[in-house]
Amino acid sequence: MTVVAGYIAFANTTTTISGTIQMVNGRISVVSGNTTYYARGLERFIGSIDGFRVGAQVSMQGQVIDSPAAGQNEVFFNPVILTLNGQNYEIGSPAASNFAPGRAGRDVPNGDSSARTGRL
Image (cartoon, rainbow, N blue to C red):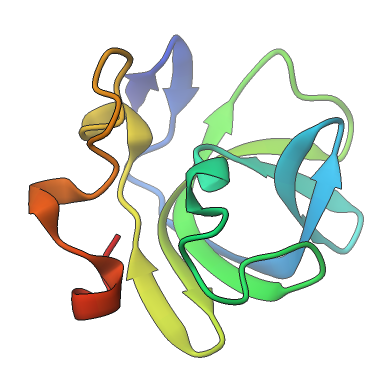
């Protein structure tokens, strides 16, 4: 178990979810069946991944985050790998990478371009 941004992440348990990208309560989310997954950090990929838009079918691997803010049929999710249109993107953990507050402009680790490497 790991604490991520004040919440408990079950880091030893990787979960794979598949669903549709939707806007729910003002957040980019993945809806699968009756469950809404609020996936942390997906907003940083708007405009940088071709086809990443509302209605797209995606799969994600990552950890479920236990949060008192989650309602019934709502889950907070810390994605590590995003699959869209058959392409895998290693998106990593926003809390454990260059995406921390005060690190603006460092959205691409090591200066890699997703167009060159397929890695975000």
